[in-house]
Image (cartoon, rainbow, N blue to C red; front, side):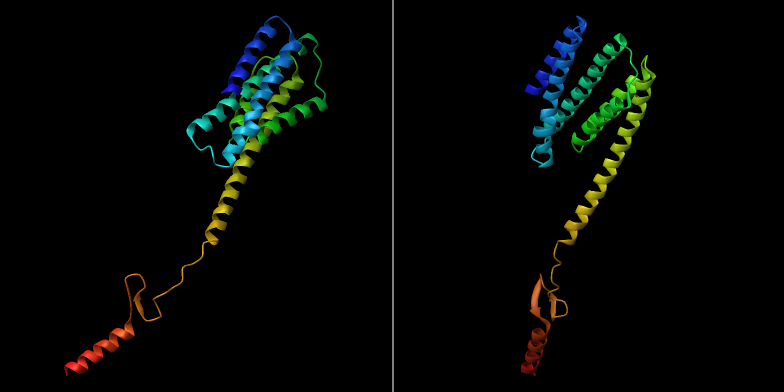
Length: 212
């Protein structure tokens, strides 16, 4: 809850700074808000989910809310950069595209086993791609980066299922087989009647001999 309140407070402060055209201050506020959401995602909630100590619904709800808010903050940060780009339109260089792509990939991979943040970032990129633009370089980057993130999410899902199947097979093979006691050793049923057959037969013969 404190991280969520801090993120929304920063979002309100960003709106005020952006409205009065304080672009540098708006960027700083968004960086603080993004850091406030990365802290619970990377440390608190992620570790609890991996250790399976936070299996309740409210824990996963908190995780989803933090990731959706983080994706929203990234979108507003890009919008703030776009305001600077409108003032001084400069085509993006290859290092700028590479660095931006690494940030998106890093967020997607390190955000945990669920694909929430990756899906939100894909939504943000597609929204920027479908919206109006003045720079064809960034416009092409948005669609290419969204496709890269989609491929990463698919690969992560496949690898997770493969690891899960491998773990299940390993755990099954580690279970020792129960010894076959009873059958083949003169016992009718090791759980219900542990009396040996030979003893019964010998007792029957003895009784019959006595009666005769």
